[in-house]
Every structure is written in C-alpha cells, then in structure tokens.
Amino acid sequence: LFMYESASGERLTLYCSKVTEARSAFRYRADEKFGAVQWIESGFGWVVSGPMDKPRLKSIASAAYDQLENRPAPGRSSANQLISRRGS
Image 1 (tube, one colour):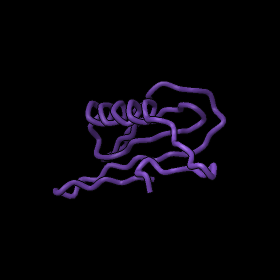
Image 2 (tube, rainbow, N blue to C red; image 1 turned 180 degrees about the vertical axis):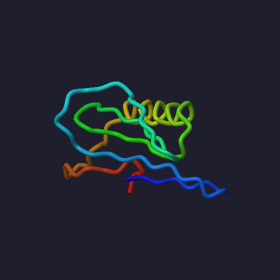
Image 3 (cartoon, one colour; image 1 turned 60 degrees about the horizontal axis):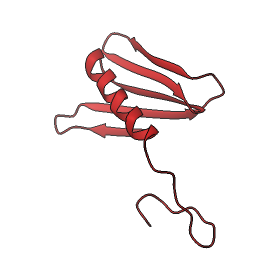
Image 4 (tube, rainbow, N blue to C red; image 1 turned 45 degrees about the horizontal axis):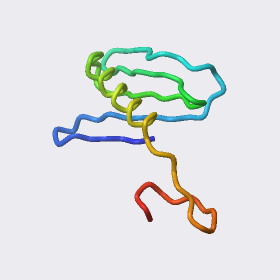
C-alpha cells in the first residue's frame, strides 16, 4: 500500500497484492465519490484509487504501470544479498 496526499488534502492510493489470476487490462470502477483503476501484471494485482476522475486515474495508473514494468532489477551484493534500489 502506497498513499500520496497532495497539499490540498487529496489522496491517491496504490495497492498491490500477489495474485494467481491471468494478466488483465486496465479496468475502471467507481462509486459515489471514488474511482479505481485495476489491472493484473506479472503475478500481481494493482489498484490505483482516489477521487472519481476517470481520465486522471487512468493516467496515473498508466504512469505507475510504466514505472513498475521498466524498473531495473534489484542487484545483489557479493554476499548474494539483495541491495535496495536506493543503495542502502
């Protein structure tokens, strides 16, 4: 779970969970005040949720997808331990 809160108090949340379902395209769902874009990729289910604004949520979900899919693989130290992307 990752949450972003803007200076105006608007919140966006990115959820992630391991799943066994097949890959899926973006799907938008909404209720009275909130919307969400969900998709499945590489064994993980992802959801971006926030205020009901379909174009904006789809844009944020697309940016998250691009960054998650194009990130470099984590490196390993000489002791074969994972090294974080921040290098610490």
